[in-house]
Structures are given as structure tokens and as C-alpha cells.
Length: 152
Image (cartoon, rainbow, N blue to C red; front, side):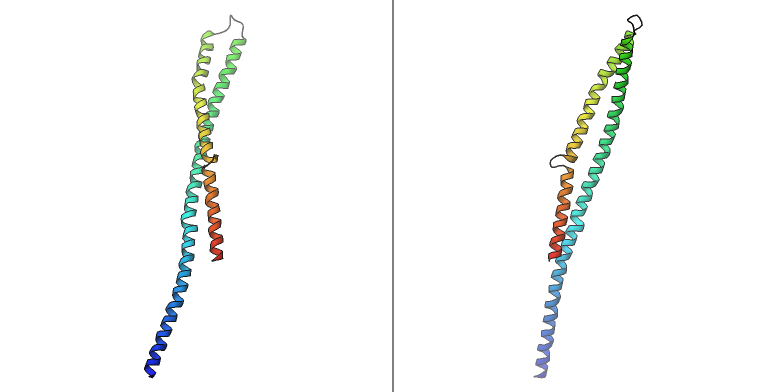
């Protein structure tokens, strides 16, 4: 009889111990899951998108520098063309005027192409469904998961 009571008592202790540890383990698993979601998946995606935004800005900056360089060349050609055309007709060099006009016409398509490329990059970064909206979405999701984790 005493042995049976001891066995039941030991069995009861084991059941309570197992039951309690499984509840703690479940709660720990939930917290671990949310932590992995917040710090693992979402932060990594956020960092990837932020890296992409920085690279797009660097590419756009390269286009802007080239755009400014070409625009300076065109402005210089226009200034030189005005100076050449303001000279008396006998002193004007027609070859120089033709070369300056040809340079301007040759560089205008490049300038327009660079402007289109910069607008395209701006649209990808700042436009609807762009990189900035993705970053805002990830940050909102992270905050929501943090709030949910605090509640549970």
C-alpha cells in the first residue's frame, strides 16, 4: 500500500513537472518565434532594402555628375557660339560655328537620356510602391510585432 502511494505520488510529481515545463517551453517557443521574425526576417529584409536604396542613390549621383558635366559643356559651347556670332561677319569662323552647333546637337540626346534615367531612379526610390514605401512597411511591421510580443 505504501509503495502504491509512493508510486502515485512520484507519477503525480512527474506529470506536474512535465506539464509545467511544457507550458514554459510553449511560451518560450512563442517568444523565440517572434524574436526570430522581428530580428531575423524583417530586419534582414529591411537592411537589404536600405542597402538597395543607398546603391540607387549612388547610381543616381553618378548620373547627376555626368549630367552636370554635359550641361557645362553645352553651356560652354553656347557661350562660345554667342561670342562667335557677335563678331563682325568678316571675322566669324564658320567652321567653328558649325563644330559648336554639331557638339551641342550631339550632346543633347545624352543629356535627355540622363534626365530620363534619373527620373526612373527617383520613381523607383520615391514613387508609389517604391523602396521608401517598402522601408516604411517593414518598419511598421516590426513595430506591430514588437507590440504583439509585449502583450503576450
